[in-house]
Amino acid sequence: MTVQGTVSHDSLGITDSHNHLWISPVQGADPGSPVLDQFEPMRQELTEFHEKGGQTILDCQPQGCGRDGNRLLALSEASGVTVVACTGFHRRKYYAPDHWLWDAQPPKISEFICSELHQGLFETRDRPSPVRAGFIKIALEDTWARCPHAALEGAAAAALQSRSVMEIHTEKGALAEKACIYFMDQGLLPIQLVLCHMDKRPDLVLHKELARIGVLLEYDTFHRPKYEPSTNLWPLIEKMVIAGYTDRVALATDLAEVRLYHFLGGGPGLASLPGEIRSQLHQKGIPEAAQRQLLGGNISRRLAGIN
Ligand SMILES: [Zn+2]
Image (cartoon, rainbow, N blue to C red; front, side, top):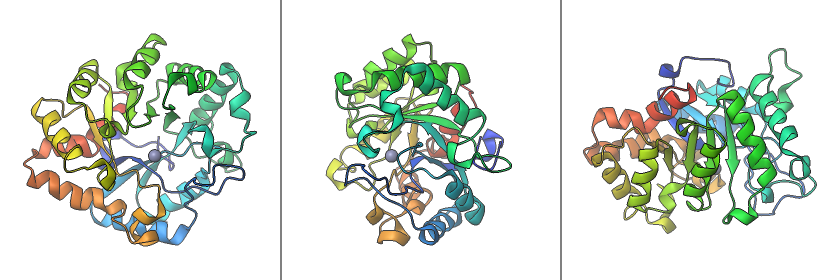
């Protein structure tokens, strides 16, 4: 399910598994929250992504923390890039302190998430055909005690009912194993679970164990020097490929900060995934078939519910 309606999963092509295309300012949110609210530069950014061979992007901003499904649709139409929108919840600091979600009980949260998957995104309900969410995005905090348990329970119920993919923000990989156990105990299948930002915790033994269970690991620190991608991310990709786990890793650039976009801040931009990053995979001898899996094949099959 894309913002423009349903498409066949094998038409998604090169896909960025985790990014941000639009974030409206949120009153009362943490002052450091990212804002991406310039249409024209983002349209250019997407056009460049498309010209480099990129075809699809998963937008990871849920309702209440700056998402605008109408803008996502307009950006997709104006650029030719397929966009998949999400429902769910992000970290609490990105919301107004009185946002309804944080006091809600699990059934209400589940009902809301299911309604965004089936009827349409809250802010697009006035359209003749509302934009629908294609997956669930949730966020963990650094410790289990600090996580929003009612929201986790509600999201799990919604994923169980809808069989949707759930992308799980981790704080630098923390709680990855806990989240797997929790959601599988709730009845979710490993193919529904995508653990995000796992390359910030480049523990190969852990990654292989998680891959063996069947969850998808999302890596995205290509443009984050503080995580030393040449020492951590790139060897991790090569080792996971050598270990035969080419079907368990999905790549993304998760830019979010203005400075990292080409047309907003002079950064590497969305086009770096089909551009430099793809070239580098090639130079490192990652086989073509594996490149296709890492750059879209794996996430698109899971969005379609195929193992
Ligand atoms: Zn993100």
